Length: 326
Image 1 (tube, rainbow, N blue to C red):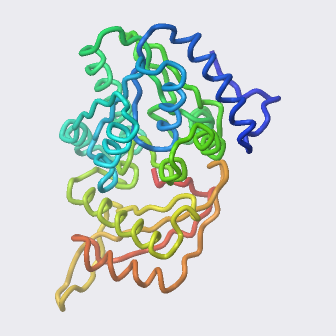
Image 2 (image 1 turned 120 degrees about the horizontal axis):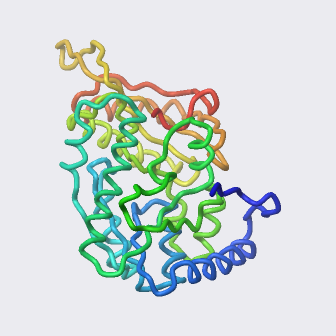
């Protein structure tokens, strides 16, 4: 059955509206789940974290969180997820390092939609395997939000968390933030008492760095994306832009250009920086970075990240571009 955002639903902009939504969802979740157990794909991003908090309020220890390291996460992210959720929030968290498994499946794959489908399918397989190790898992929770649904329905791009499970998997989907826009998810997260570092963090796509490594993913180019992204996030924080720009990241495409390093010719990748602002992810404007910050980013990325000899900036808004490159 197709799910529509109610025409009468008021945009969630205040704590009072968020509290009302939370109360409604808790009742719906209790009714749907009953005494069953729920398996949640917990990436540590805004959507999955808010989904986890809602489920914890609704069903408590019936929730089992699974954090899958598919090798496409940002630098330090798996460690951060374990620290925040297992040590600070005392969540029932299972950590799965499936890096080799995912990267082997993605080897040689260039089409972006095929990559997304492989990643989504592999996620489902990992969850199914973890569920078989547990007793009484009947539900699979996902942090699907409204832009995911719209972009999938309109054929813009596939989302690993916007489709049904394969017929042979006996899981029922639980998607409590499915009808919310990203800004609404943040308001709900704050009302739930989640820390600002979690609620206000920039969004990160389900396929991770896989969609920021256009073309066939290789470990060396994936590492270049990860290291460049870490530098970008560090310097944005140093410059006071953390939390003020909606999303910023690096892309390393699968082509090379001639450059010079230490007086010798190089033939290496470019690094593309993208920074955008938006309210609901349906459209986006480009953040115009200060020249001195760009100069610093160019210097650090080209000197510290192996394999990169150029830094470019993407000035294209959404539309005509999407926020991510794939």
